[in-house]
Amino acid sequence: MNTKHFDYFIVIAETKNLSKASEQLKVSQPVLSRYLADLERRLGIRLFVQENRSFHITAAGEIYLNGVKRMKDLQTQMQRSFNAARGIRETALCIGLSPYRGGREIASFAPHLFARYPNLDLRVTEGHSRYLLQCLYERKISSLINLYHPDYMPRTKIASFLRSELLLAVPDFHPLAAYGSPSPAEPAPLTTRQLSRLTDISFVYLNSDTVLGYMADAACSRYGFTPRTLMRTVNSIAVSSLLATGSYAGFLLQNTAQGMNHMRFFHFPHPQYLYSGMIFREDYRPSGAEIYLYQLEFLQEQRTNPHILYQNDLGKRLLAEEAE
Image (cartoon, rainbow, N blue to C red):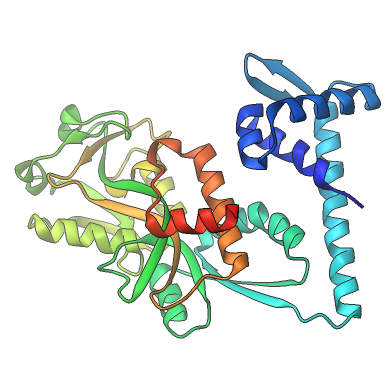
């Protein structure tokens, strides 16, 4: 079964743009336009509605999308069964993910990985940053997708795809909020004196077993500030949920602060940045499956977080290798 054209439909539905789909699929726009026109003519129903340059999927399109995804999954399962019958040994991909990202990431990248590597044995380890880092050192996993800072993760290297600033968030009822910004994309400057006087509100933020918590501690220490802590945890969802109530102060990343309408945001006197990407041991050469996974992650971030996209030299090399 040739499922190549299924990929055309899936990518158009995901990107909602023929130009972006053309770039990702490495197929010209006229080819994609003809493909859609021919498909809709054969089926006798509209699958997309075009508004300006955006393609919005219709109810019929959703039915077709779900169908082609199921058929691709069935083809992958059939190929895996054939490989097992022929005695083809499966290749293991052992990666680490945080519990926050785990389910979402697996649902996003697994079908693509299995489609390209039908004999892949995908093994996922979930945990907080310090635990995953130890697993990496002990070679229980070969890579992890996580926040990164070189001080926290010695003897490692990263293929990055994002760079995000560490921000201080305070609720809008607090006196300091008058000097803050309602937009995390444009945080207000914070003076050392303002920070030192922020002792009348409770903080909730991640603990030092996470990269973000480690960096928040380092920033506070640099400016001689000790937060009045209500709660510290490795659960980023709990921290975000509590901060979103507008009752506490805390530290979070710029790209995770959207939609917190009751908060005001500041950046530190010396801006603090964290990177996100695939992390490897410094002497490790990524496998073909890991290189492909990096491409999938980078393209996803390119669609969802283009304003903080950041690719370092290793990331560029992996993307170039995948393109060859």
